[in-house]
Image (cartoon, rainbow, N blue to C red; front, side, top):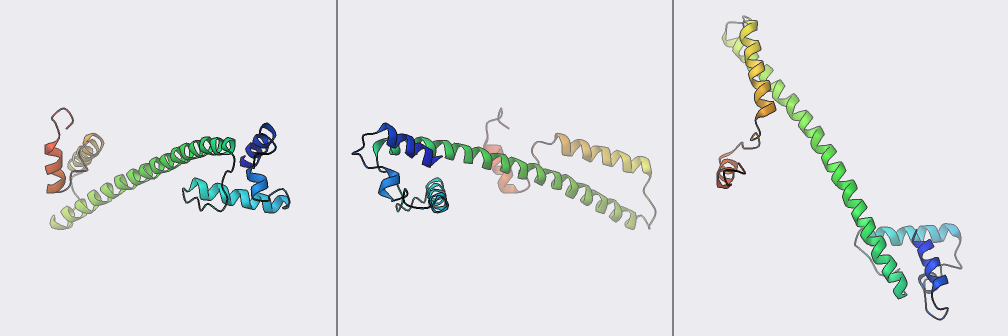
Length: 160
């Protein structure tokens, strides 16, 4: 994309004005070498490293570079945000599994202290329904320490 933008800028600009392709002698390189160098330039620019060995030369190229970098950063931000949301969903899925595993361990402990007898199915069902409801509706599960509770209590009531 940068190659096309530079080529269009070269055609639109004055022939005396230097440009990216000529300043970095890319017109004499093979297509493969040019592709590798332009990919290198793109990645170093988009990663905000911008080593400076390859850079836009003319003002038109600099303006195009600004627009392309802004678009690239915007797209990269969107992609990273989507990945974070996906990871959060997977973490939430694992948390539900962990809670259920801990509840099963709790039932096992109760049965052990009950002399090895199974719990009454109605009693067990009521406890399971309670915790399923609590896990689904409790919006403050993140408050798991005194420090978290202290921060939560500092919030305005309508935010809590």
